[in-house]
Image 1 (spheres, rainbow, N blue to C red):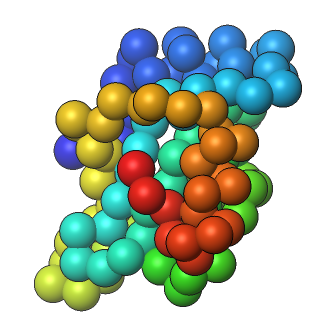
Image 2 (image 1 turned 45 degrees about the vertical axis):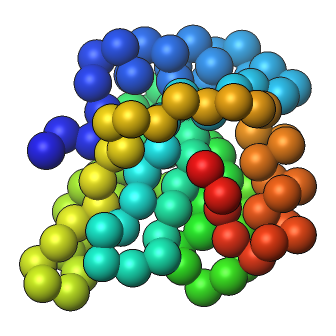
Length: 109
């Protein structure tokens, strides 16, 4: 499965160009065999650097960047890779998700 659709790229790039103070996440990625969760709001011009709330499953969610190509090429237990949550409907801003994640020590989305 491709992690990003063309419409996702368009929205993420628009946010990347504008750098809004508090955007709503565009996509959610997760690792189906573990606790990893990522919420992204922006994609840089390079087409690879994503910005958002990242928690690889260690209980330390933080705002930062991740490489789309690294996420797409990852294979973990059972040969499973990172997937896009096709049913994700954001209901708050990235800052609100980050504050909640800091309190819970995980992303709750």
